[in-house]
Image 1: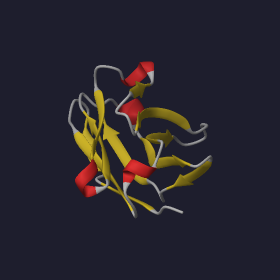
Image 2 (image 1 turned 135 degrees about the horizontal axis):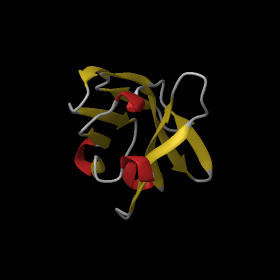
Image 3 (image 1 turned 180 degrees about the vertical axis):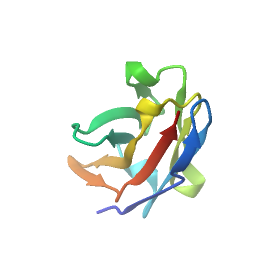
Image 4 (image 1 turned 60 degrees about the vertical axis):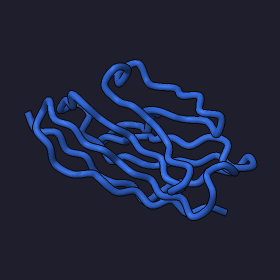
Length: 115
């Protein structure tokens, strides 16, 4: 099993930036895919970005060019750099890990973008 702990959420004005962190309880080399999802009020959870243990990345169209996912293997941490934030990016952001066909989730960190 793997535990995921997110941090870095908060309140920011439109056009601002935030960096989310997801620290894993074990080496992320063992985790096939890590990613960030978000869930806004009264909406379904959606994929924001993911990164494989080979470094391949995938982004939702609505964040391409604004968000970047990257990993620090030495710290067992995956980051989501969010730039040019918009009010519609407001949501709870969840870290996700896929390891040996099992899904793991963090507790979520809230992001609020004011207009």
